[in-house]
Each structure stands twice: as structure tokens, then as C-alpha cells.
Amino acid sequence: MSILDKLRRPRAELDAPVWLSRATVILVVLVAAVAPLVSAPFVNFDRSMVLVYIVVGLGLNLLTGNTGQISLGHGFFFALGAYLSAVLVENHGVPYPLLIPLAFAVCYLVGYLFGLPALRLHGLQLALATLGLALVTPAVIKRFEHVTDGHAGINIFAAEAPEFTGLERDQWVYYLCLAVALVAYLVVRRLATGRIGRSLLAIRDYEAVATTLGVPTTRTKTTVFAFSAALAGAGGVLYSFVVQYVGPEAFGLPLAIAFITMIVIGGLGTVPGVVFGAFFVVYVPQWTADINQSAAGITYGAALILFIFVLPYGVISLVRWGLGPVIARIPGRRCRRIPAGIRQEPARPLGRTG
Figure 1 (cartoon, rainbow, N blue to C red):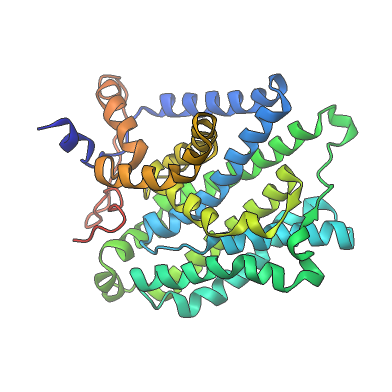
Figure 2: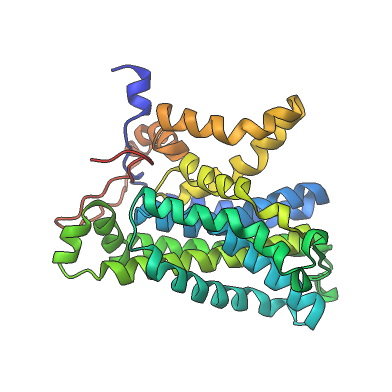
């Protein structure tokens, strides 16, 4: 078997011992918690943006990777959360801690209402419907300039660190992003691996059979769409805290492409893969821009083509391939019980059926 064939094979989730899994999680969280205290503000800015993308990517991956519904319109909900944050803070003096739950609730409601008719579509039809949402987002922002300030955008002065913490603003915002990302990760991980997750896999792979077995497919898909939209809205609020400015040009089609690129490169249907994808969409365009300014614009397209043809199951499959033999030699591995009749396998790459 050639190297290319090995790269294109799906890989099972690592069956690590419980103690190793917990130790790894604790180590990662500790490193993430200490990192902003010893880093420059611009480094904390980039890391905060990674966390923002993780929050959005977790919801989108649950929708696309686990449920099989392709959405290109999550930039709209991201913009809705960001502008909701900017308008309420700057024009109405709403305390910034209330913005994340408020944006979550508003985007959940809007996502549910949009999902009711949209999720009766399938495949390319749904992708085109949500693509239209992404295309009109900058125009809608400019149209309601009496609220959004149109082309000028809105500067945001919020999320200052409380005095008792002794933290700088960039450190405090980083910790806000980290806290939201951890909560979102735990919730999505629980949803993806529990009873709801098995229902989503059934809808993704055998929707007709899932309906026959009593899974409310339309309601489930609509709820997942609304939940993923709500996470995108929460990510938008965090984005406004990090960047301290929102403008219409930041929420166009390139943002939608970045979101899809993130979950494809990380690995569709894998929660840890979102983390790898978020690092990619933040750092790789910066590195390519240092080489050639025009190269940054083609990074996402080239990466999507490369991963679809060479590594269709994302970076996480490469990690599993490399660590799998090592984990297999460690004593004390847990034995997971897989419910009968549920096929545990990675999501099919975008554009592949059957």
C-alpha cells in the first residue's frame, strides 16, 4: 500500500488509558492557562483568535461533521454576535459579561427560525442557501447603518480586566476566550459521544433508516443548526472583545471559507480536530503573507484542495496514525463498548458519497 493510500484511510479514535487521557487534558489546560502570563500582547492576541475560532468550529463541526449538513452561512451568526456586542456595549451600556449568554440566546433563536425551512434542503441545495446568507451579510450590515455605522464600523471599549486580578487587558480577554472555549468543548464533546451523538451519526449516514427507527430528523437537524449558530454568535462576541472593532468587510465570504477550511483540515466529525484547524486558519495565512503578500489569499483554497485529495480525514487522522501504535503498547487501555448497530467511523470527506 502506497503512502498516499495510507494517508487517505480513516483512523479510529485513539484508545488511550484513562489516566493518560486525563493527564494530557490537565497538562494542556495548565499550559493554556500559564501561556498568557509569559507572552507578549500580540502573541496573546493570536492565541485569543485561535480560541474564538475553536468556539465557532465546534458548533460548525457538530453540524457538518456529525450531522452531515453543510453550512456556509455561519459568518452571518458570527457577525450578528459581534455587532450585538458592539451596539449594546457602546450605545446602551450593557455590562459585557451579559453579552455572551445574550448573543447565544439571540443567535439560537435566529438560527432555529432560519433552519426550519433551510434544513428541508439537502447537500448542495443547503450549501447554496447558506452561501446566500454569507454573501448578503456585509450588505445587510451596510444597509442598517443607523445601527451598525455602516462602512465606518464600531470601536469597542469593553472587557477591561478587573483591578483585583492584576492582569493586563490582553490577558483577561484571553482567559475569557479560554473559559468559553473549554465550556463549549466539553458540551460539544458530550453531545458528540452520547445518545444525541449516535442520533446525529444515524442522520448523517442513514437518514431514512434513522427516521424509520423513530429519530425526529427534522427537529434534530434544526436544533443542531440553532446550537451551532448560537456558538458562532458567542464566538462573535469574543471576536469583538479581542479585535475591539467590528466592520462589514470582516464578515464576508472569506470568513465563511475560513470556517469550512478549519473543520475540513482539522477533521470532519472529530472534536479535537477543530483545535488543529483553528491553529491553521490563524497562523498559516500569517506565515504565507510573510513570504509573499498575495500568497495569503490562496492559502485556504490550496489547503482545501490538498487535504481533500491527500488527507481527506484531516490532521487528526495523521495524529492518530502516528500515535496509534504507541498508545497500543501502553498497558491499562480502556475498552469502550460500542452500541450494536451504530457504525463508529469518521465523517466522509466533503463531496464524497456512498
